[in-house]
Image (cartoon, rainbow, N blue to C red; front, side, top):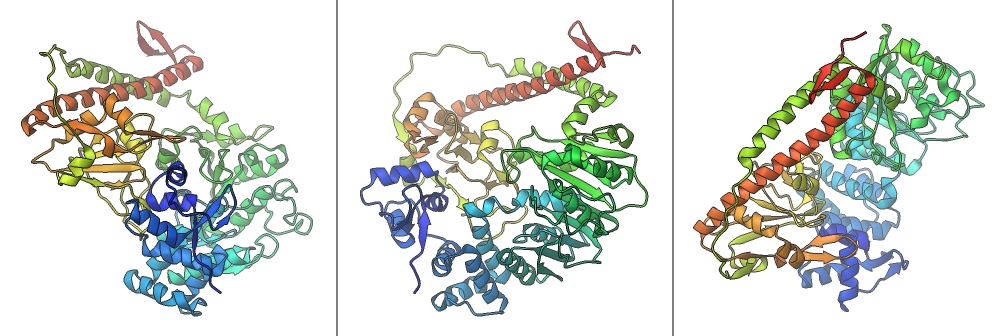
Amino acid sequence: MQHRPTVTAADIARLTGVGRAAVSNWRKRYDSFPVPVGGTAASPQFDLEEIERWLAEHGKLPAVADEDRLWRNLLAAAGDPAAALAAAGEHLCGDRPLPFEALREELTGLSAKHGVRNAFEALWRRFADLPGKRTVTTPEALSELITRLARVRGGTVLDPACGTGRLLRAAAAAGATTVYGQDNDPAATRLAQLLVEINELPGEVRLGDSLRQDAFAGLEADAVVANPPFGLTNWGHGELGYDRRWEFGVPPRTEPELAWVQHALAHLKPGGRAVVLMPPAAASRRAGRRIRAELLRRGTMVAIIALPPGAAAPHAIGLHLWVLQRTTQPTATVRLVDASTEPLDQAYQRIVASVDGDGGLGSTTSVIDLLDEEVDLTPSRHVAAAESSLDTVAALRQNRDRLEGLLASLPPLLPAVDPTAAPQSTPAVAISDLVRSGQLELLGPVRAGGLPEPDQPVLTSDDVIAGRPGTGRAGEMFTPRIVVRTGDVVVPTTAPALSARVIVDGGELLGRSLILLRGDPEALDPWFLAGHLRTAANERQAVSLSGVQRFDVRRAQVPWVPLDEQQRQGTAFRQVQLLEDAIRSAARLSEELARQLAAGLIAGLVTVRNGHAQRDTSD
């Protein structure tokens, strides 16, 4: 018997592009909101069809996407998310018909419309976004970083702890020609194998414990990528004491991560790279210092990268990436990169630049300097010391010159403030009325879903607030797909204060928690619109306090004046925006310069005289 599909409050929030607090408000404010049909008091479940009907009646959601409806029906029929996805994948591959006959036509229609690969990808993303799966899978952005650092393009890739295959999927997208994976979870292995089959990739995925039962013994890959389990005590220490993979030393029982590192190296071709996600303690624990020392002496260590907290589970700590190589020509240096304090959405590009060049986050450290009694490879311990270099002095001078130029640009931007005649009362019009009259188009918010997007930057709420171009991750999927244009006004729905920004250079995708206002250029000036939206009166008018501060821009009002008057005011608002952007840039650069100055003074590299930093040339 097939059960009716259900959704949680979090699912409803995702479908509608709002926060969970808004869903809670709907339940309290509307007696007609559907009652739970299951779940618990803390996490109730609602009938999907009833929710969809209610949302449509109240103008909250035009329709549920085909992929969302199908995924919820599959969940209801199978009960287990992994089983639901596996059944759909086997049907799409032609291995076995979908056991839920009533859903076969719907699944076949989705694949006919978008292709087998994209249909499975859409369902796979919904599976991966389930709350229980986010803690046990490698996030997509981190998977892309790992495969990029491993240089997988054109080569054979092995993931010895592949789980559902996220790293293999990222490797395939990055140009790997053959992929191999192994995992001891039967359900996860089944999904990873389906991913390989549907993408028509050479290779295979096998079931088993890679350390105890290596399914690919003798395989030498061009790259090995891994997010192995941390902290296992029963990993096979007793039975693997004389394993030939331990060429750098037998891993102590308390160091299972060093067993995974050596397993990865054992499967590398000469010249190949391995990238392994590691707990930060593995870089400094006393029990592993001899193996770390041998890895350094043999020249296998390319880089150690400290990631910001939140990069992967456990999210509260900053994990490390170990980049290793199989080489016959040991290098005398190691690249240590400390990105632990970087914003997560900006860190990954800087990490790549810092490993392969000079991205400003790392330092090149001599192996001899690392081979002390502790062999502590924690990047923060060494990067701070490495800042005491001539490069730091050059960067300090460059930033000082940049700040001086920014400060010099501020006086011309400061407007002369003259009093005006007594202000006259001007009629106001609500944003909702402008939308109804057709003079303004309101787009968004978008939600996760749909089919894969091309490689395109995404505008986020933080970008709008900070006044910068889109820094969102390329490759995200959104429904609907909205490309921002020059002259659009973008407003975050959740922010410390009501913010509005005019898009100067378009082309980015609209991200989540944003509303886009696209006006008729014959009726509305965008700078006039953005300037008036940011007033304190509109902030009070649009705010909705429900655990977090949310804004409904449709409630905001703007003066109703002729277009020429709008343009006059818009020119003034644009001048104010330029001033604000310059001040914000100067503040960010001032903070960085102060940090560099302090580091240079402490290291004895510079002295400060008459407000100028001078290089200290004394011995």
